[in-house]
Image (cartoon, rainbow, N blue to C red; front, side):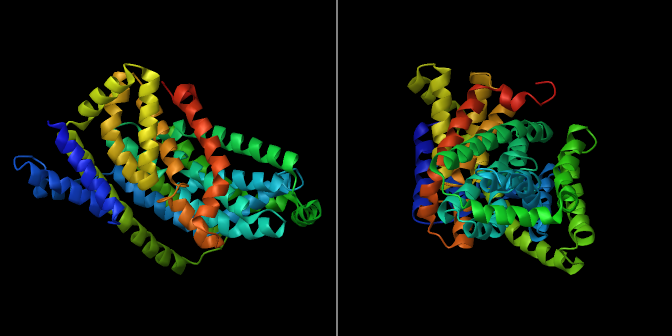
Length: 438
C-alpha cells in the first residue's frame, strides 16, 4: 500500500484536530477520506458504520459502562473523604504527611473508580480546601492531586486496560494484575519526593497540622477505620474475584455496581435510592461521548490495518533506529507521548495498539501484557499535559486556578512519572511479577 496515502490520512486527522473538530468526528472523517482517495478501498461508508456498531456489541465491552457507573456512584457517595480520614489519622503529624495522605487516598480511590478525571474531582473537592486551610500552597496541592490521580488508569478497574485487552486480544484480568506494582512504584516515588520536598524546603504550619491531627484522633482509630473499611474492601473484592478465577472482568464490573450501591445507600447512607437514577443519567451522558470515541477510534485503527500501517511504520522505525531495540522503544514512547498531548487515552490506545503492538511483540519480543502497561502508563502523562489534559481541566474547574499554572507546578511530578516509566519499560518484572504464568 502506498505510504503517501498513510501520510495524507494523518495530515487530514491532524488538520481537523488543529481547527477544533471533535476527536470522534476527526477520526471518522479521516477514515472516510481514504475511500474517496482510493475508490476500491474496502473501508467504505458501509464498512465504517458496521464496524462502529459491532465493536460495541461484545460482552467484554460491557465492563466499560459498568465500571464507569460504579465509579460515579462511589464518587457521589463520598468515599474519598472516608479514605482520606484514615490515612490522615496516621500521617497527619508527619513531615509532608497530609500531602502523602492525599497521594495514598488517590491511589486507593482510583483503584475502584478507574478514572483519573473522576478521581481528581472526588479527591480534589474534599482535600484542596483542607490543604489550603492548613497552609499548603494551593497550586502545589492541585498539581499533586492531578498527577497522583493519573495512577487510576493503570489500576483495576481501569477502562483503558479493558480497551487495550479487547483491542489486542490480551487477558484483561492479567492486565489488571500487572498494573498494580507499576502504580505502587509511581506512588512510592511521589511520596519520597514530597517528604524530601518539605524536609528541605519546609513551609508547613505545624500548629495547624497538629490541630487537625488532634481533631481526627478525638474520633478514635476504631471509628475512623470502621467508617473506611467498606471502601477499602472494594478493590479487594474486584481483584480477588478476577485473580481467583471466580469472575470475569465483566462480571466483576457488575459486582462493583451492586457493591457500590449497597455501601453508599445502605451502609454509609450517603446516597438515597432515588439518587442512583440521576447518577445513571449522568453516566449515560458521559458514556455517549466515550463510546463514540471508542467506535470512531476502532474504525480508524481498522483503516490503519488495511493500509498496512504497522508494516510501513515498522520498516521506517527499523531504518531510523538501525535495528536498535532500545532506540525503537524510545521512538515509540515519544510517539505515544505526542499522541497523548492531543488525544484522550482511549483514542491513543485504540489508534496506537494496531500500529505498535505487532512491532514490539514480534519485532523485539515484548510481552503483550507488559506493552499494555507501558502504553497506558505513557498515556497517563497525557491526562496532565496541555492542550487536551482532561484531568487538568477538571482540576481548574474545581480549584479556579488557570490550567497553565497547574501545569507549571505539575512539571516536577511529571518528570518523576517519566522516570518511573523508563523503569517500567526496561524492567518488565515490575509489570509481570504478579501475573500468573508470565
